[in-house]
Length: 116
Picture 1 (tube, rainbow, N blue to C red):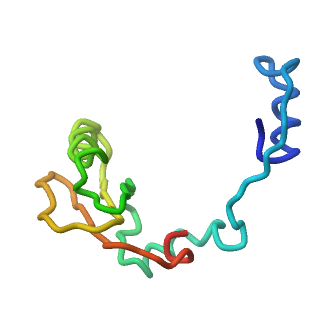
Picture 2: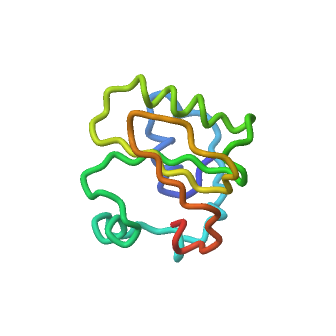
């Protein structure tokens, strides 16, 4: 399955996928809202350090044990990535766990433009 005719063409010319049937299922995302924005401008508007490496974690309640926030933090502690920041989108009624890198909690975000 592909989300565009361009992706179908890529699949049909792939050494691995050619010969297999490919069906287009168009993306259900509003591409007028969820599009690429200027990275530097967006980071400035959101108060994020321009040269940081941002990792995103989201969930309605980010402390829900089924979401795995502690595992995400543990994994990020183990990788050698300079200037990493974890941005958490969602509700939080507990303090954030300690980490050797900044964790930014945005709270719930309902604006699709801001999420994009």
